[in-house]
Length: 276
Length: 238
Image 1 (cartoon, each protein chain N blue to C red):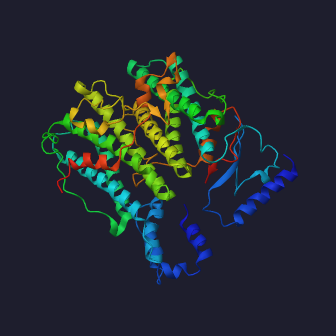
Image 2 (tube, rainbow over the protein chains, first blue to last red):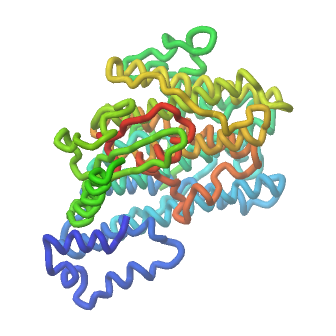
Image 3 (cartoon, one colour):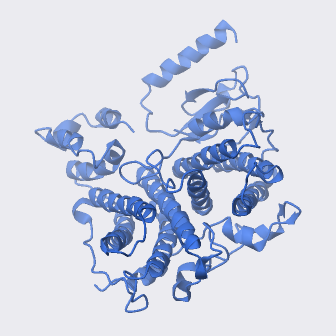
């Protein structure tokens, strides 16, 4: 996406675009001085704010709602990993700390990106209780509990973004950015699941993908996986289709497709960790 | 290719450059062959009227609109399924039981995707594509995993990039259900190559966003592995 190409295209229909954007043309300059944190890739979203100033138009409320919903989840994840990394002795070795740091940085970047996109419409960060009212009381002292909650957060994130994609269809750029966050959350989920498998115990057979419904060995997160055991896609029962040496198994059918979750269901899950 | 054809091609480019449709979705022509560099001609609003180019109607036609996008995904899933089928049939030397189990799972997921698209597309489905895996050493862990990584990362960026071209919400949701599974695969394969590389900075930018690739770029990247010529002239891209 070329910023100047966009401006040029607008010029075709609005010769005064530069004046509208900012009489002193400082807005364009400001765009290029965001610094390293907001790279070129962020510009189309930042443009949303710019256009708002220029035309007095707003990003449709429907899209603001989705972005704020996403921002709330990203706040949750970012603070969770920040606290986990800060808890002395929780994460047992440098490899694991490295992986959690990579994930934490992505969540921080998602927060920053969404806040930039939303501008003054961005919601504030809630107060979180990562013990979920005591259900995970040792979340920052027991590494296995920490990973179990991380597992639930990442799989929830994947389902949440997927569920909102349809709401963003009218805006190609925002849809693409949401999809580009969505797959990063899935990569995180895959790695956290591998970390849990390596710990053995209840997670000894956990796979990077979701088998059936709640496969995490943690009963308290059943609602995160509600409906993940679906094996019918667009009317086609996947287990009726041919695999190698017979029909595809139920496991393959459920693993091969991640399911979406409604905003309401996600907020119910996130709500367990939000004090206000 | 004759001079007249090249002339027309030049004209197309100059026409394209002078239009103000830069933000419009475009269809494109593609000539894909195992050893042939792919030429992507951006043709604004390519329609039947443009059908007088040599080679235009050659190859497996993907269709137009959402059907073309679904066939495009079906083509990629055929490629991945064929690859993992071969990996499972002829495991690389030194493969561990866990690796074998995980790669077999991935094979079954890709087959599920492939068979799903075939079933969903019904009579609009493209035929089976012939693949070219001559560049892969299936006996070598390094070769197999490097290819798997390339395919999975490509698959994720392909679905990420195609989302905005899909017209029907139901299909967008299906693409979403599949892309996160491809991302789970990609992360695993990367970790098998080097633990901790599940979301490397080569695929995730400084905003924490994964790459997107347009269909034309994805088909170019996949072309060396697909023998069958694909006719993507009406495939939406940008």
